[in-house]
Amino acid sequence: MKIKTWIRLTSVLAIPLGLALAASADDDAVPGTLPPAATKQGVTYAGDIKPILDNSCAKCHSGDKPRGHLKLDSLEGALKGGKDGKVIVAGDSAKSMLIQAVAHLSKDSDDWMPPLHNRANIGPLTPDQIGLLRAWIDQGAK
Image (spheres, rainbow, N blue to C red):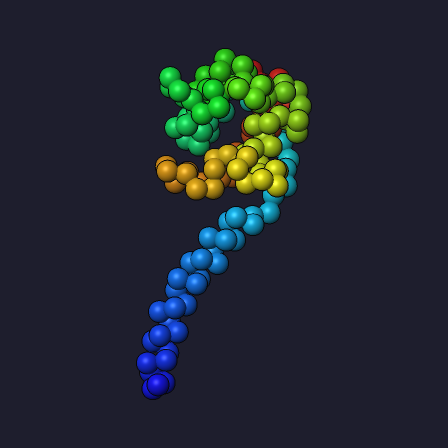
């Protein structure tokens, strides 16, 4: 086999292999660490939190059939929780399932929100966004 043919063949084979390795890297993703709460005082759902949830969560967690029966498009819905119970522990963000999910603290990436592979291509929340959510919850989730 000629060297040019060999190089072309290995290049063609390397691309799918690289894609397969990249996909498996997501499956073996490492849980994150909890970013600190933001220092901002007087954080409110309407002014600070709703825009984050609208951009990152409401596509799946609103409407007539929200995922997990969890509605995050209103303060009442967020505080009520879903089929797995309350996701916000007012006054203790570290124990709130919402924070654990968006900070990717679980070893099981199926618990991460937004999910790694979602139809809307929504990326993970930034540490600053998670910090603001934490401050809101720590301040009583109002």
